[in-house]
Image 1 (cartoon, helix red, strand yellow):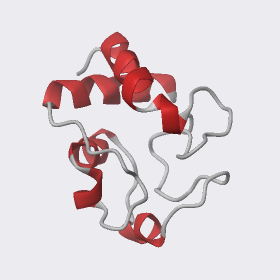
Image 2: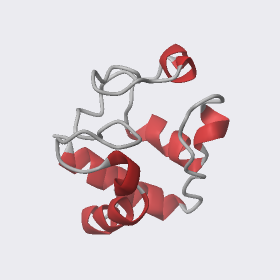
Image 3: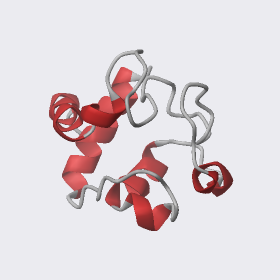
Image 4: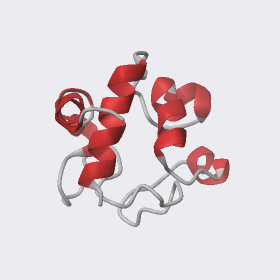
Length: 103
């Protein structure tokens, strides 16, 4: 289990620019403010790529861990320009924060 406070810092530093915070519309990416158990492409306020929709992912801690390691490798054709988090501890912290903040 990761550290929620460390994960929040990672989110603010590396994710919030595109994914915003709270429930307002994101500028470049979908909001993480929906439950993690939702299928990819399920958001109503964001236009997902066909690659994301056809991957058939239901977001959970295990799929997020794989995705956040290297988004373009996990979903070729995604619009996500983020290179990924190579450190397992950072991914665990970010996932802990996302799980806590999307309850």
